[in-house]
Length: 411
Image (cartoon, rainbow, N blue to C red; front, side):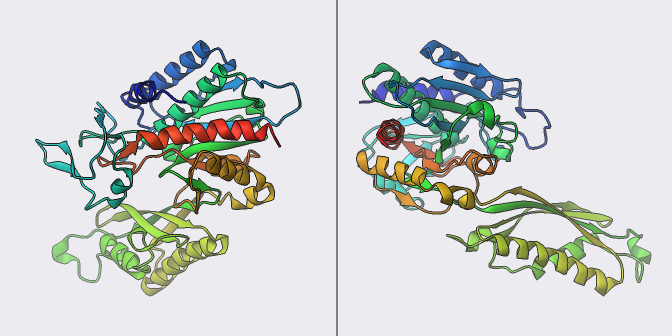
């Protein structure tokens, strides 16, 4: 059905282009290098002969595969992001192709003694006998989400080459800056014109997700008073010590390394400061909206308590909501999840329906009026040197896209 060698060639051509985003940039895309892949994708869609191919000033790419039948059918969309995380290097990605994986350790980089081992990542054993693409141990791979892009491109190419497959209008969307939470901020839902869509941005084969975290970013500003340490008694206020008290007063087991499933957390992901001022950077996550709001109250109450102990306003907190749980927007249209589930069964993929411990463009798009569940793209260990993706999983994701298009025409 799908030519494996050409599929791999397309995927490699995407991941070897550096597209890291930058949360400290105010432009869209946030980095100039994202345009390298954006322009390539735009040209490939034109060469494919699709309709309404466009790329706007912010790097959002859209195109249409026209319907193959005359009867009225819903327009559905498939979306993926082309940026990679700023958390780990995406420069000079050098993919390694492991054919017929034998279930043993994979040496990513002999010189640096970097090994991808099933002792550490036991999900590798699920892919014995398959073709696995890995990093060389010095960069991430970029399957998040260039696997999704490859799958959408291959599916659309297949459907275009097989007009005998009945389907309605299909819209394709590729976005920048998803990894820094801004992938949907300038997405033109009205222009996209789909009744619903799917992001191809999940992990292991079978994942189908329609609920995600509620999310907020937090900055805790702690003021101090710097005095010469030799004469500091009764005068100095060390903001670092106060920040330490704040950190240790939060629930220690409600952190990412101690939670799973629908459990939320407080995550301290940055700290910098001196005696005069310390800034703590947190992210808050919870699937339950009430629990999410309660976490904000915990932070505010803790700040108030410490301030009262000193009789001074030493701690102030800035909380910014980032995205919300899309479940409330998907539940009224659950047929779109059921359609994806049916498509997976049809191509011999067992659906794994579970909440996302994170967010996707789909969560924001759902609140913008485009219901958008998330489907697996096939990769594992995103955002680091141990990232890998089985080719067979990506091909199955491509088959799921094709089958969704086909089944949507039969409803």
